[in-house]
Image (cartoon, rainbow, N blue to C red; front, side):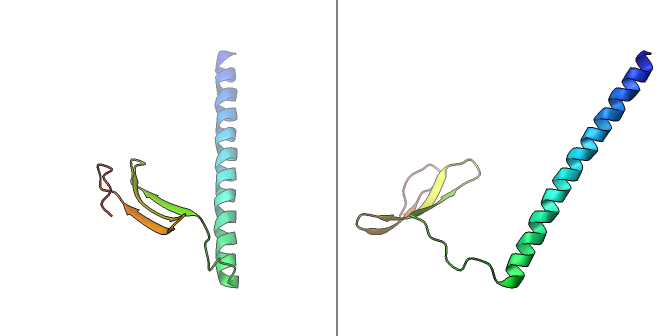
Length: 86
């Protein structure tokens, strides 16, 4: 009786893993196809508008930013210690 319950649990787990894998595969393929179709049709944004762009390193530290302030555009570059260099 215990062996059949274990087999049933393994089967359910395997089916769950297959279902999740199928959903991930479907999502990945759908996104890839949609992106390829958009590029093919020329539906790619030629302009990106924002008030600020921030670049961070692998640790999440701000390393550069390009922003529009009260007095015009600003570019800030920081070293690995966070010290502003430009």
